[in-house]
Image (cartoon, rainbow, N blue to C red; front, side, top):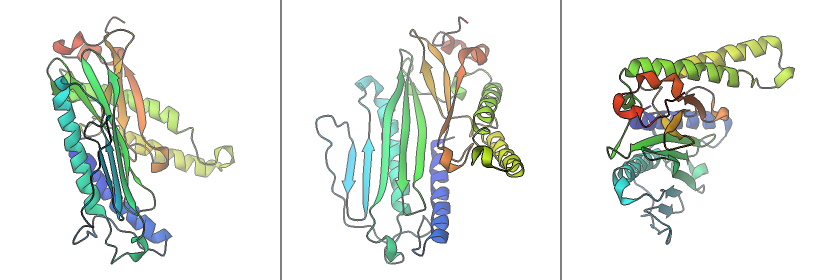
Length: 283
């Protein structure tokens, strides 16, 4: 899923969560549709100390923002810039979604939060994979989770998408889709709420709905099959690719993010020649 698509999903989900919150509480919640005409007093920026690499910590009566970045060497400045740009977009979406305390006095004394943590998920000679995790609480029934990924190719000095790695991206996405759908069906359909106590009819209906959500969320589109990190192998070569499915894409909110490891042998023949040496294709 593209960065912009994630932000659009964030805005839509924030609104949806606010509506849910309204139905469960006598205190109305708010989303992007109810924007503040002016923001709270100017935030005070504080440095994170000696270990800081541009971390952001903003603490006001109305909201708190915490954004943390990994330590990266100068050669990976392109990656760091991308992380900062992503954080700026997420922060902007959060500020736009803050409820107006005049319209929703029940939230006037509640400090809303944005937490964003970028961390190196895997590092190897050819790739550096960064995972973005966090949450945005703008007064809804529960916080909106944030989950995305970035893959930096050290040889080219640029970020790469999943499609960039393959000679036939559509065929590769179909392979990934098949593996992911099968793995998630096996994993999630066994997690019926209530377990053995759930009546057979309710169980079948729940499993049918879950199967449909998995099938739709893993469909081989460039939007669905896009978030990933490269898995480090025993040596310098990558052992595979971990697909990431943010909350709501393949399962309800309570199940959180889902991931599926896809081994090299599932896609080795589709790798572009320039990338084959970076993956362990010996199997």
